[in-house]
Amino acid sequence: MRLFLHVILPSVILVCILVYLGDVLSLQYSIPKRDTYGTVMVRQMYAITLKSKETEYSVQPAAPQECVNSLSGHFGDPPCWYLKGHTRQRIDVNSAQPQIFGR
Image (spheres, rainbow, N blue to C red):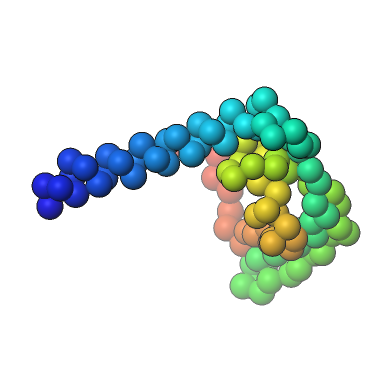
């Protein structure tokens, strides 16, 4: 247990930090030379929960969504490798619960 807490865990945390920093630096300085951003066609579907506990679906036409070519999401955009595998996005809208404001 002592070996785990003093050697293995800090080493794993350090490697994760170094990989993330390398990802950020490669994205900002385009190392290797590549496009920083890409686009993927994504189809969004709104799942609207009605008061009668039924769900109504509203499918939107496919639209391009911006993504970053990196291991993790940066600058508010998801990574392209993830978005290419999730081209259908479900957005839950709950109209069954009343909105309470001012509390």
